[in-house]
Image 1: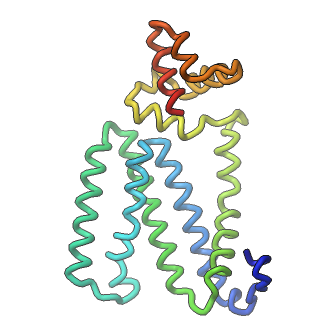
Image 2 (image 1 turned 60 degrees about the horizontal axis):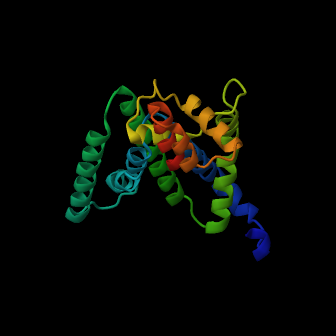
Length: 219
C-alpha cells in the first residue's frame, strides 16, 4: 500500500516512536501465539471469546494507564462482559486441558490490550506507517513459531489446529480418535479422491470409520 500511494516512510518520526511501535508489534505477535496455543488446548469458540475480552480489559485499565474517567455506563459494560466471560468459561470447562487453553486465551487478550495502550502512547505517526512497523516487528517475532507450527518439532508435518478443534467440538475421545491418526486416514482418502460422502458409504457399520467420516465432512 505504501508503494501504491508512493508515500515514503517518515524516518524522523518513526525513529522517535520506534521503541513503542516495536513493542506493540511484539505484543501483537505474542497475542497471536498465545491464541493459537489456546486453540490446542480448548475449543475455538471458547478461546476466541476469551480473546475478545481484550476491549473490556482496555476499558477497565484506562483510568489507571490513560487517566480516563470510568463512568457508570462503562462499569456496567465491564461487569456484563465479565459475567458473560465467566459463563462461557464455565460452559467450556471439561477438564484440566480446557483450563490451560482458557489461561492462554485470556493471556492473549491481555497482550492485545497492551498493544492498544502502546498505540495510544505513540503520537504524530501516520496510521499506515504505524501498522507497517508493527507488522514488521510481529513478523520477526513470529518467524520461529511459524516454522515450529508448520514443521513440528520433529520435522514432520504438524496436525492442523482445525482438526484438533473439530474432534474436541464433537466431544470425541482424543485417545481413541487421535488427531494424527484421523488426519492420516483422511489424507489417504483424499489421495484416493474419495469424498466425505464416499468415505461414509464405504465405512459400513465400522464405528471408527463412521466417526472419521463425520470429522472428514466437517474438516
